Image (cartoon, rainbow, N blue to C red; front, side):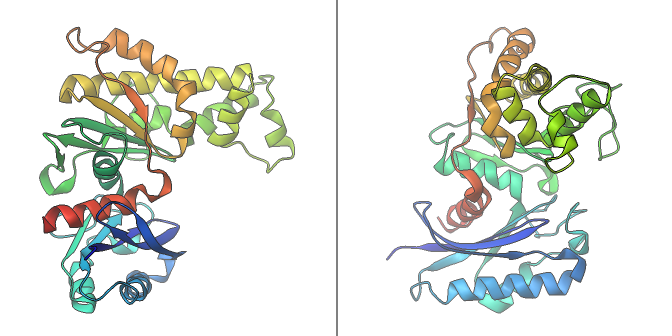
Length: 319
């Protein structure tokens, strides 16, 4: 009989639930708005309704367990979520007991970026590697670490906050409260901010039209598209972000000696624009015995990555 994991990805905007088989195939999926402003219980009840609906279409006896990917620091031992930036109503809360009571299935919970690393190691670009570092580049920067073929979660599940290694102690303020974090220098949010800053200073760029009529703002996707089309200002911004990423990745390579670095998230679609800067800084800053040995590659699993990571967590525990 095919085995299935019942999984969900609880994000700041959307909750997505799915059935995933042991080969990593998503067979059924549904999505709804998170609506965190309605409070903890409302979010939980709608999550349970989605999971119940999917459980009802699974073949009898095929469900192995439930896996939840949460957008916030999460203790995998207890399922407790800490200070989730976009789901504040779940701060200090664990959904494990409620899910297990409702569905009578063993439930596992972890951070979404950490689980994305597990997914890429199990089903994606890091498959077959014993040691891997994963970064997700989006609004912020997160990640996960695979050591000896196992997900490294650290004390209380807080490992993998690669976006908050310090790159420039005198750099811009990060939302975490520190200065010069990798996230504050190379995230999608920062790329957009750099573009607006240059345009406000009078830079001549195709990006100007975004401020003057196409939505009234500039985002990271617009910068990447302009850079790919040859816009000089946008290319400079992507190169700068790539250089900062290279500094951060070199530090991670020196610390963890991975076989591969996998980059996912929305900005990974523009990885080719940043790879020259990443490569130059890695060449400068990676220790000699590691230099040139660690490829930086694009993730393969797309939007389903956290769902697949939650499934890998379930199947890994089930054996």
